[in-house]
Image 1 (cartoon, rainbow, N blue to C red):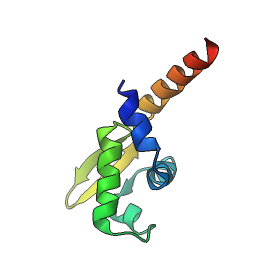
Image 2 (image 1 turned 90 degrees about the horizontal axis):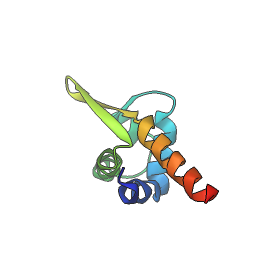
Image 3 (image 1 turned 120 degrees about the horizontal axis):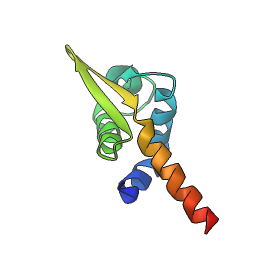
Length: 87
């Protein structure tokens, strides 16, 4: 697990909001972008950081890209934090 990449991705409030949106189910990049008052390029960069940290997965369907949470990485981070807390 690359904890550094995960924590870096979680450090940004927009990325945390995107993760919160995705906990309700997968969304297209356009649906995510529609909920923010920033450029599509900025949303694309945020999604790229989340993907690089393996916090989200993407699936292309025709001309759309859908994003969904990768909860296994979040579970690994929680285990790591819990382990730190216990020592």
